[in-house]
Amino acid sequence: MIIDRVCCMFRTISEFSDSNKMTVNNIAMVMNPSMFRDDNNSVLEFMSMGPARSKLVKTLIENYEEMFLVCISYLFFCFIIASGCTYLVIYNNLVT
Image (cartoon, rainbow, N blue to C red):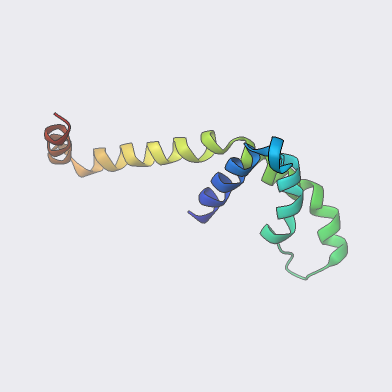
């Protein structure tokens, strides 16, 4: 997923905010216009929704691990279950 990779990048950038000044708030404010578009290109509508969109981007960055890594782990687990015991046996033999 693209949003997963983008949020991972934003999270990594924010971890160096002491040197680059790109806090989660700053990233959310700067990237908000690039990540969202209005259907009718209304500047007034875009400006009125700006704070809510910034908050959404901030939430995605701050909760990156919970939102994306847990989902990926869960999907991998479901894939293993759906693949059957043969995959587990092969994986088990590779690990041991």
